[in-house]
Image 1 (cartoon, rainbow, N blue to C red):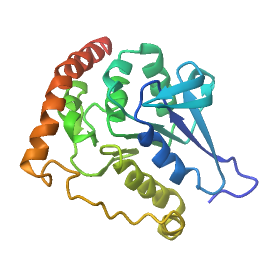
Image 2 (cartoon, helix red, strand yellow):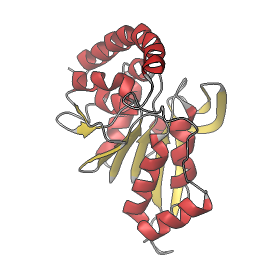
Image 3 (cartoon, rainbow, N blue to C red):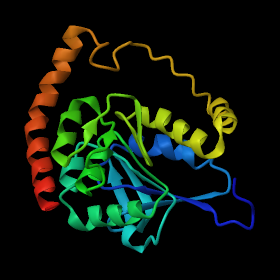
Image 4 (tube, rainbow, N blue to C red):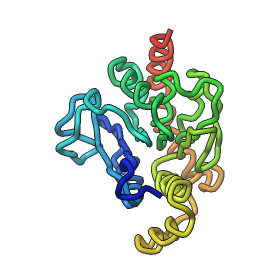
Length: 231
């Protein structure tokens, strides 16, 4: 726990245009409660960032962020395309190499991979695109929250909330994390048991698979291009 005389624990969310906003807002809601901390929202160009129907304003330019204790990268359908942005992945790598915790949610792990941070490491990812992780030398961990050393990653979208509480407990202790959980009334009770491919009814899985297959080829091509750019 930091005292008033100690430097504040610095969390940086590295967001990007077109991301899935719940990958960011869920963890932000939880991790911004960390005592003795400051949270920065950064993006490639700074300013306003459009994200899946919402626009977030006032972000800092990521190149202007000197360092952080915890770096979190959200995902989205455009993650593999962002992996080809050498300026952005370069800043991700720079911040990650000095951070205590390197984290992601959903396909944000593909951006960590494109930054060269997951070679030989286990990582979670949205199940629909997890097969792309080995392109970056990573090992897919199917857990909802996966940890490999200082790398902590969450699975698809809503797993970001479980991920955030896991990280909060790691830093501030389980009792504090549970207190925040109670305050946020985080007690999931989904109306359908269809949130994982092994749980969803066959007809629902088949319907989603049509969408997944349509986008997977392009995502794979983008991921391979991003991996080639890593050298």
